Length: 318
Image (cartoon, rainbow, N blue to C red; front, side):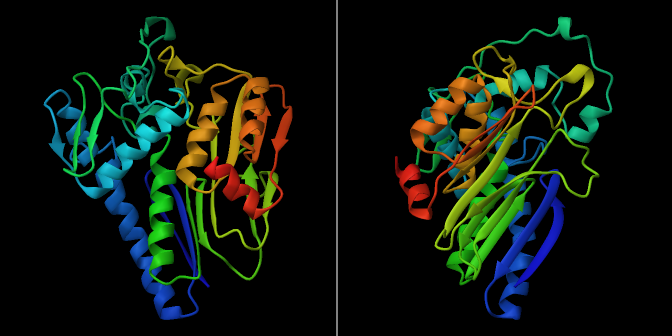
């Protein structure tokens, strides 16, 4: 087994590979950093020359030819929007920009913000007008619509790399991009994933809120956390936008961690739950049988679990 750590997508990245061959493991780890860079170059809204930025600038100009990676991103965005009944909405980009998150977070955090009372936002337009043609490999964005991959991009990137490396011959792969974790294949021991408590300072040695344990036989797994406690800047602003209002989300939940069979879906479910009151979110998660850890603003911890790997797969199919 071998591993590597690096910075990309504005966050800490950790990739672990078990292939039974040190040479293969080393090559895959080098490829991991290169693959993340390619996906960031395609999906980043902070790079003016990225494919995403180019496509956002071409909104209203009809179908545009796109790469496989961009097509995958927009397809998953559309599925996420439908899965969540519109609560997960990548078209919140205008609100995000208006609230001041229009550059990488280090730049945003260093600014002096305008008073919150001077900010006017509108509900998100939604994904209904986005036209995807998988056969022709084109995407058309309506005029005035821009896409923000912030709540799905890292999870989807982790899934892409984990799946590609597993198909390339790795027995087990774990890809962690800023806390969005995708696992493909199996090791000799069960997977155990620690959930950080985002209320605690980041320089603490142990920030573990809870450990999610998954039995042997869990060959495909995604874990993701959505929280209003990270990426906060002037006057307590945060990056979780409620598409119904176009403003920052305000519920009694401050953190939701979800396990599913892919990291991108875990991200979607976690964000959708975070946009609801804890009572509604817990009921929604329990109906689908989704393993989750929820934390409220008064420090109440709520959990819902599945017992077996087959249960996890069944919840995903449902």
